[in-house]
Length: 344
Image 1 (cartoon, rainbow, N blue to C red):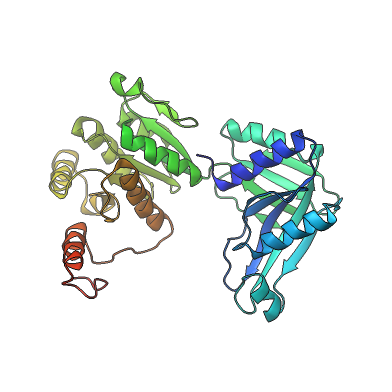
Image 2 (image 1 turned 90 degrees about the horizontal axis):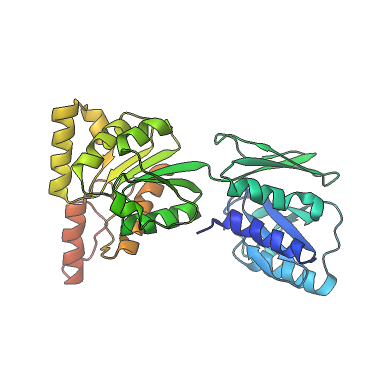
């Protein structure tokens, strides 16, 4: 699954290869609430087709109407602002007084979209610099800590995965987690030394490691933009890897299993590997948010929802554990609870 950024760029390359005029639109600034964050991209074709999004839809509708009625006539990049007045903000679906500033770039064969795509396909993180005065584009390597930069003379955008996810185990659940995570801007590695699981693994764009999981954790030099999810149910594979991950700077470490199994896992880690209370507190298990998930796809959503909340610094269900959530969910289903928002 491609993330939105990659989908936009791929579509631009296809339009250019077909000889169609198109423009790339990037959100530069927002004031007040905005449906899409800074850096969001949209591409528009001369026939009115669009991919991506920069607003809730009204700005896109305006661009489509202009493309169809007037064509795409820009020869150089332009900065456009929507929503200066309250009336215009309302028209374009922005909060009253809200404003959004966009860079609109006419694309050509010199825009290096195809070259950028090739580098992204190779797994690179790339900085794309657009000269706002001349339209000249240059590409260079980037590091995850960099962010989009804009000045009067240039716009520098970052493309490629800026987060890393290591999944231990190549089972069915891992496929769903890996596919969704790719769309969330993660470079995904799956590690499984078991031959029977390696043979059936086939998720495009995901690296498959056959090393022992703890060796893979060490080799990846996990940092604060890394996450580890253990999905094998096998202590021989999970425990050593979790030990190494919990001692790293990874922002998220989780393991599948019941409450009882996770309690036993914590006891093993404390007894046999001298894990501290602080290190064990980093372990998310049972993994995921309780949403009543049953199928692998639903469980994957639950896991990645929790991972995303941790990444974004959001406290979810503070004071409410999975056991309590299940109790409240059962009571709510029978009509015995009117307000399930307060922790027990």
